[in-house]
Length: 204
Image 1 (cartoon, one colour):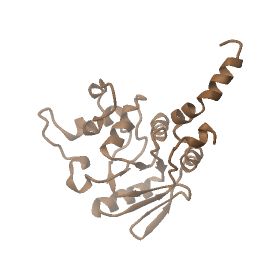
Image 2: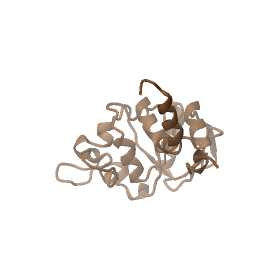
Image 3: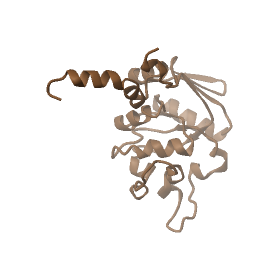
């Protein structure tokens, strides 16, 4: 057995659970996790600060926000709109949402770096057109306990009695379905091969 075979990176072919609608275009990473909460040594505990300034006022009183609503507290699929995760490239954004409980995203579009950071955590960023996304948001707003099933391999989302076609970036789909999304783990597993290659390079 090779070192690579011993790496246990889970294949992510499907994600199921309940949803939470986060409406609005161009929601940037500073809204997702304000910069003042990034002064941490590890990502542990970041979840409670997700969307903090949109969820709380200056006196830490709750504002009207889906993440403050009891009916969405166990949600693990976030349904967003256009250009979600834009702005700075901080990896704290998907890290915070993952620690809040999010496993996957459905949206109109995602900032490229945000989507890449999500993939590194095994979190799919599924896209669909505006009408489809807003229909899902409206449905889970009305029926928050509805089970949502994302089939990454088949590129479909099922909720209620409805199944819709969605898009998964081909590179992301392959990485998730084949279980090769954790590049750090793959590099560690191939450390011997990396060292051997490095030894053969004259300029190192």
